[in-house]
Length: 281
Image 1 (tube, helix red, strand yellow):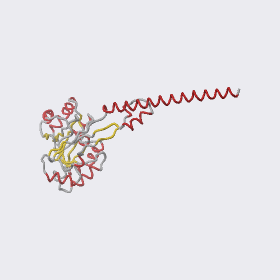
Image 2 (cartoon, rainbow, N blue to C red; image 1 turned 180 degrees about the vertical axis):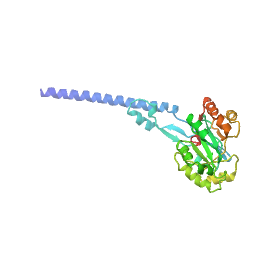
Image 3 (cartoon, one colour; image 1 turned 30 degrees about the vertical axis):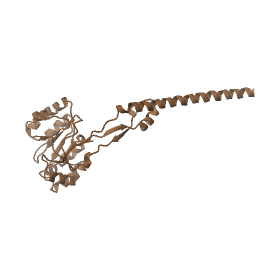
Image 4 (cartoon, rainbow, N blue to C red; image 1 turned 90 degrees about the horizontal axis):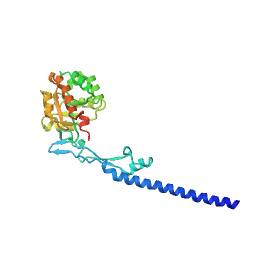
């Protein structure tokens, strides 16, 4: 009887050992196949870096790339046992010339590989932007407002609300004088008000003194791709290009045509985004 139990025990041990070995072998095989599959498919998910375009003292921002981290992705998928693109892990590939290291250059456009534009409203001290805001809200559009110090003083709560809603506020200082003390306190208010991380200056000419003073205050300097003061719908239609930074003067004509502009741009497959998003790398 004792010998029978011993034999049975040995048989059980051998069978159990065989089954365990088979399970380990199967798991190992699945793991090897999963690793191979991730390596084979990674090129479908990698994204090449698009480098910044620099010409003399101007820059068009680049776009960071991404590369599949095979080891981290494998660890993620090993638990489920099959390839799942949602479990892929990536390493960011940084552009060689990031914007933050090129504040001594005028930004003249967003990257043309993204089908989006920025509408930038240049606001005078006595202008009302209520109609513009109402139309933007109706279409859930975020835009950019370049304002002067007096407008900020007179409309402080409105501007803070716009920043918190994701709009970008540009800094015109006092009558676009970037040597004026208003420039600094405006920058402080704008960049500390909520979602906006950066400060933006505005000029239509390559004025070196503007660039120098804005850089000293850790600010980016924008030269619009197109400045529009009249016939806004026709001019936007004729100048709609990927990455365009379109400056619009706030007036009655704009109030009348803005909704048509938005509808046209969207129907052409473009996104309308604020500067903060347009210039993201």
